[in-house]
Length: 364
Image (cartoon, rainbow, N blue to C red; front, side, top):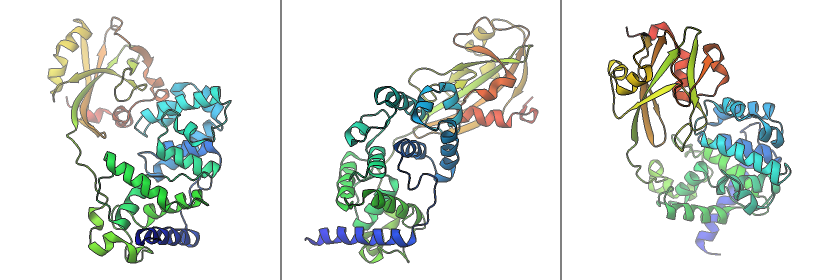
């Protein structure tokens, strides 16, 4: 056995010993063997903190106890339950995969890793989690917690989000896996990264891996893992017209196309190429064509709202106007009572405004 092989074996042995003695992360999906529930928890926890994801997981399990329930549910209901979690492509893939399993597999999750990986929205990490936790197959999970632990312990400086880095960490994770107890090992390394080898303020002084950790020995804990430099974010400016009718109805539409928030609802949108004053938005060609010379009353103009997405920075405002008569069939929009808005799933940008809307926002 080479020195490096010994280092790997020592790492795995110490990790499993730590897990059996000090494992204290209690979560509703922990120890779960049902693949549907494992899949649901993993999809929810992608890009989501555990403390936030727990409530969503419990809501979904209550609403959709089995995969047929999720597959047959109205999409609007599923999106509404997902509302606030962001990264809505996860929800679209969740629905699509539920329908596939319900129809093609008679509601039974496939048990082979390759078949699990072929499902929409399931990547190597989620497939490994389902395969190991539900079916005891020897596949190593590789998530942010895992790569951080491995990068620090072995001193790996290859960027974790690069093509070479993904391959390197996948191979290392596979080599460290205990094939005889893959579920326990996978849970142990994820727990260790979440509670001991944390992104900030890791518990290095009391860490079981301290003597073998390359980052501890070299003083590079804060520098590992390495990420490739991200490119500039796309800047977008959204201005929403909340167009009210005398019957206290407003216009909304479901977003379509391959853009952010596909499948969610929004008010009448004017997207500007740059920051604009509300008065400029009201006098734009878009507004002139929309209102077609109709008399309108500007009721409220909100403060500026902002939201940061992974590759986009959003900002904009909400302009509430009241008309004397309905618009002439704006393309794709429908009239709904304001009292019914709570039934529709909206992106966080709009949901934040809806939860805070009050006359106090008025700039006039």
